[in-house]
Length: 621
Image 1 (cartoon, rainbow, N blue to C red):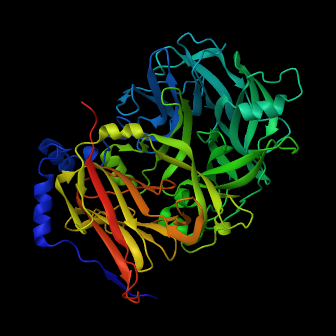
Image 2 (cartoon, rainbow, N blue to C red; image 1 turned 180 degrees about the vertical axis):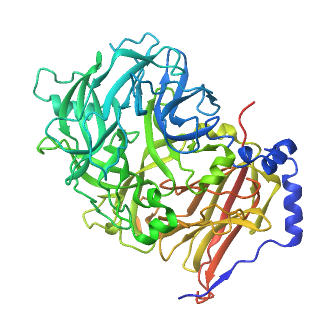
């Protein structure tokens, strides 16, 4: 094992200059805020920028979408307003003009009744039209109506326990009205033994429409398509595919399973892990480059039943160890029996992010996705004490990540990375275009930024905040060379609390060390891990010809912190979200570091900090 040395931090005089440099930054928290955070358990770890319910438990985001008639975004969520534990699932509602500031309803927008959804209103989607397709200011929710519990992929499935239902709204989803016969699909497809059948997603899908209707009278008909997530017992997780008329949202035609991968399909143990035995909230998304030269079909899925070690279950908890937010790229092939076949895939987020639910935003013209951020790192008593549990992520944009002229990776072979597609750029197979999927922060979040705090590369070490910040953002980049063992930063919460985030080149890993994040008992502090590599690129001369030398890409961290939520994005392709619970719910600063190999030669190129920009964050006034 190599031994490490740590780069020295800034001198005392430099720290003094940092204090002077940031004195004019607008504080994110008032003294009243800070005092409340120290004394009020409801307030201490409650995010200010992320969506939370007024009270109780929340989980999956439901029916995200845009109501063009009222120029309003809707984001629902599964909600138990009566407890900080799962149960009595209703829908909560939040409305926004900009995806930044949300007005969260104090009462459910749709809740179980004896006649409807007697055991729960589960996850669904929103179609921005009336049931008959008219754009008259009515929007339609299509969701899972539950009449019997428990429902779990390890338990016998009872037909009729999950149904597909609909409701309409004329106030952008603030309230939903069920139809007289709101359940229009009462059970899964006949002849199939399923492990689950829920969380419908409905949208237009031109690529699938071209495949299904080719050579028929319905060719280019513009049908809508739906998938209902689940699995076939003892065979495979899947999404069940339906075709719908855009003018009759309650008339569905079953087409068959979308894809069959088999139980615990594991194309890449390190880069994706397995795809479980049952799927939950699943979405299909078509993405293209701006020049339309590359287009791909993607399936986003919440995965249940992943293989896990006893140690993983002990340290992370059963849900975290066996569930994951995943994605796959699939080829739609007219010569195949099934509409979609697997190409490559991975995790959309390597932390506590789950149940991602997306929609096409006609304003920004991009696919927006929200996820549920778990609260299971707090024990039951702490959740009860704070009075709420669960957070909805900040908006992220689903996009293809394209890198050209890639010749290798920092340690592994390109062919071993199962979460990317390699498109050869030459006949020798030495240079590739790398394609992957990512979900990155929506650029509209820049409106939350206060004044930038930017330091030059000579000021390595501690970045001191002007006071304790509860919400902040950082963009940090390193040039990485062979001397580096670890490169990253500490989030300093107090003199005794810190969270360490770093990249380890030898193992190609992002690691979040939470062992010292909180001094409060009852908080889980296991490490978070994500596989991540840096790519090597062909270096081109002025005539765009390779000079047979390569350059390694820089390491880039993008971090968003909000009281107890830490969203980390690395090189715009690896996401890891986690929770931290420092006593104050704030941070005092960040400490940058490079741990170097002792055996690095004295004449070798040294890794270095290239830039570090920090912003306090607050909602626009």
